[in-house]
Image (tube, rainbow, N blue to C red; front, side, top):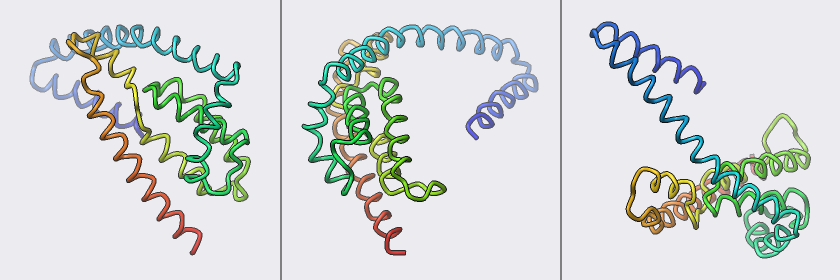
Length: 194
């Protein structure tokens, strides 16, 4: 669906650019936007490679199991009945850890693994389980302690103090997580009752 939206926006830009005689500006925007996108991707690549490597080392060295033990009371509260020592809980913990560091791209493989493990536990494969729905909410509205990616982008574009957004990030991410989980829990209870 998003592909169609982007395609429509680009097509409309070209049509209105032609209608208003401003095709040179549209063409300039295409080239400058493309160059800027490549520049941002290359800048993000170094940060993502570093933190993805750190997360892989944490997984191989057993740090992920330690994180899992620390987060297991939270996992038990959010996912009642889920085995906190299982593969699904471990992947959820690593996903939460990466998201707390503001590393959405590094969290993605753990999120996919968590969803795969939760899907294996799902008794009805044609419908998302309550665990799966709750995990999507948890992953989407994750708490960020260190907004690494945003800080890197702010630094790249000349912010004097790239981390000065941290209090705002903490407040908004905690609020979105609490509200999202509360709504998911209420709706999950309604699903069970119906």
